[in-house]
Length: 149
Image (cartoon, rainbow, N blue to C red; front, side):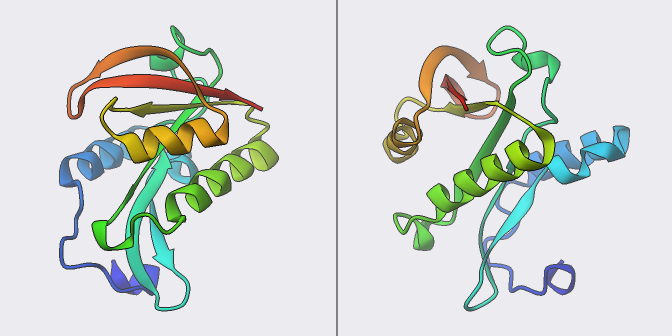
């Protein structure tokens, strides 16, 4: 993986092995999902992987229909040593810009645990508003937040 990324992986890699397995299974079912799924967050200056990001599916996924038809959900994880430096903001803005300019996406979803105050604050700063909640099988209760561009 380091060779493909041309970047150094952190010692704690993989960050979420179950999530990677789930995304890989989705990709095997539908190779067209490749541009939408997991991406490494790589620090330009040192070529270190500092987190992961990506969309949970392509736009218009069935599971999002009750919340926001036509939306796409994304998320990110910044490794602890790199948090509170603006990387989550840069990542969120970059993902949304790509989806908007390349694919015409106008609605975005983030699912965030209520106690994840830094991510909740970032979502609010970006203009996301809470539209509901759901029970995530990995993270437990999460707020569902939406941004319409």
